[in-house]
Length: 267
Ligand code: SF4
Image (tube, rainbow, N blue to C red; front, side, top):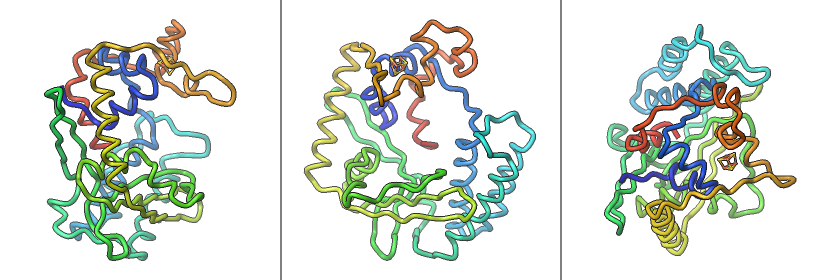
């Protein structure tokens, strides 16, 4: 078996959700405009570090989705996202705070870790480079709102950054957040992950994999005010036996679970 951060975090959120997704093959439809925008944008960032025109790269790829029936959130449209993408790329280039040497090797870096159970854990790190002159692991995020910065130290609890630090054995990590709003903004958030947190994450992965391989998939429903984990879960229709909801949000691709680590490329 090949495991990824996405798999482990989904199991920890709700084991039943994990079973629907990875054993039964139910996947969320990939028609969310924000997700496709994020992919186009990250490819434009790669063009930027390869010294090509990032806005041209972004427009060329995003243009291919102009006439498709994508799911846009309120106030969003193809045109609006197009302008936001271009302004964010311009802002990022003006800031000039991130350097990636040898982009061929240091963008979408594949990391593999052998597990005691015999499987592998695979991650694709967005980049390894420098932010404000400090060498670190870099994760790009596109979003519509700022990431919280208080209380101090919050970022060191981000499980995805802890995972990447554990995989790469690099303590310095950074989140570069591209905020889609009228005045484009880029946040450069940096933190250190200590050895203890990395070791604990490794233990969490091992115990979670043991649970998965023992076939424990009881639901962890999240309906209790003010939490609403089930309401935002794409598998809600399966748990409620609501076929209309299933049809609107899911497609089924049995047998796709062994290729799941590819999700890391777009996560
Ligand atoms: S709807 Fe709730 S219980 Fe069902 S899979 Fe999703 S999170 Fe789990």
